[in-house]
Length: 348
Ligand code: DOR
Ligand code: ZN
Image (cartoon, rainbow, N blue to C red; front, side, top):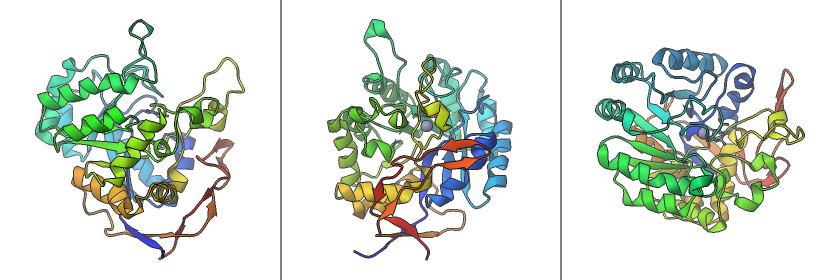
């Protein structure tokens, strides 16, 4: 088969960090073939206000002005309906909810959804999107751990959708068959992102391999199959959000016995060739355009990109995932380091 031309690839969930790490990783959005980044707000301190989000956007534009950055706020008690209206006017697109303590910088995450009803109502009215990290916190008393945390979260998704049927909600980085099936039963206002790495990993791949550890963790092979299947079917409400989440190598390694391993898999620099490679592996390459662009853009009402249409050439040629990137002593390692992909990016 010949090369594939993909139009306006959009990554609807990515962590671009702050400070030096941001300077290192933000250029990798373009390197991976993408021209839209839906930017997560879990910085330190989190992006809880419109002003912080706009300043963050400016800092990203100073690093790479050619990417369209869609900004989000971190759901927290500081948020008010007025701030939602201000955010909408300023072009902020969504609000991200992290349950307390489940992942990187989520100490300020939420404990109960009901208290946020006035916020959700304002978001529904204004057309802001609610992005859900769909896991409940681990709780030994209730037998909840990383393996069933997503499934246990799904009733919250259903309740939120029933209460706010016009509110657009995205269940982020689905990892289970149960999540796929639940989203399918819900209305058109509910979308779902799938990462590249969850199309590749299952439990055995991260148990003992810290660079494959992320939240939510990859689940059973049958869950991975369900994620692949829904892309193969071309379901219009499922789309790519890479959840590319770089951490310095020292934080990912387990060489320090007293420190845990940071959660996050880093896919940005190889994203489009990686997704092409994975989709081809389960016979879904024909749905590449829809999965990496069309479905997400339709859901978000962003069918035209910044310099749209931007065409990207994906060349069928073996390419090895390149070495670690480094800036001022900070090093990050990409997913599948040293492995071979069946595709690479080409010029037009
Ligand atoms: O693995 C993850 N890493 N999951 C998240 O939800 C957050 C992310 C991060 O920011 O490192
Ligand atoms: Zn994320």
